[in-house]
Image 1 (cartoon, rainbow, N blue to C red):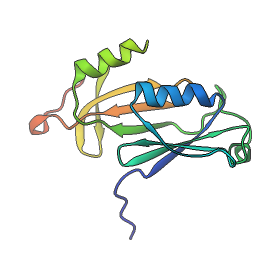
Image 2: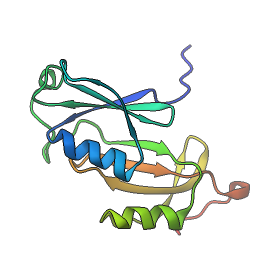
Image 3: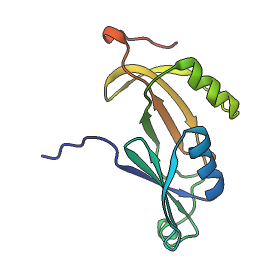
Length: 142
């Protein structure tokens, strides 16, 4: 049997590499960890995982066919567990970057708790996940 522990990495095929790097580093706090420009791979660290960005015009990105767009996505969404979780601070930070978001209660790997959904500049859906509600308490929304 296979026992998955966590997300290792997510690969996104991208059209505007610079804009995507700015979003993931400035808005979500990722750090550029490794660049392999010759094959078209930029790897950003988010906690214990990586987000790999591959431009659709590069060696790796071109292997995936047409670029991402409204008619098709590279994924539904990826969820990042955020700790520490501070509703007001997270929403204020997103607001400073022009992102309007709301908190909803969703079930995740650790149980029912707060989630914030947003999209990156190329429309990839992201979920920011907080800890489970205290004492297993379930809320419909905040």
